[in-house]
Length: 237
Image (cartoon, rainbow, N blue to C red):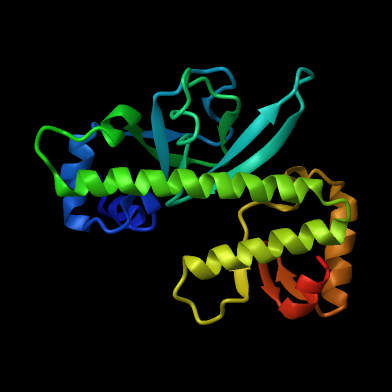
């Protein structure tokens, strides 16, 4: 595997507390498979059976739910260093309730689930750590889904935006060594963000502009900065 992809794995929570020099042995041990996808190419579709979890090495993905009319709603975004499919492969039938779409040219690493959760015959120490990390990730996934439900339950546009931006700022802070913890970049563009929040794009853009004029936030394209965190939190009270 390309050395730059090994560096990306250091960002992945599945590889927490595992030394980078152990990555090649680990990937061989679990029969990991590297695949490349083009822009707007589906990795899998709703109702497909899934047996491997995925890690984004480069590019980004959309997790989407489509209704009977073919309309899609974005459930989540997955970028480099993040994993996906871990909740599906833990179910009894392993049938996906969502589709996964590549937003751009992307490199994906697939790890068979049964190889991840079952210790190999070589008693690899890193394999035990991999299993522990997987349990933690599943717990964090439940928290993420709870936040998504909370976000969709909010009625006001400003409340939705404040909740989303505060969450993204915390997530950036937890995964960055930058001293400027109030500046961060988001994955979705404006159209995708409106779909994710289940709101009108034009109304959302007007509200973002008002929040900027009031000095609560600043932004340029997909980079945001929270100028008044306390005031933004007060929006939710």
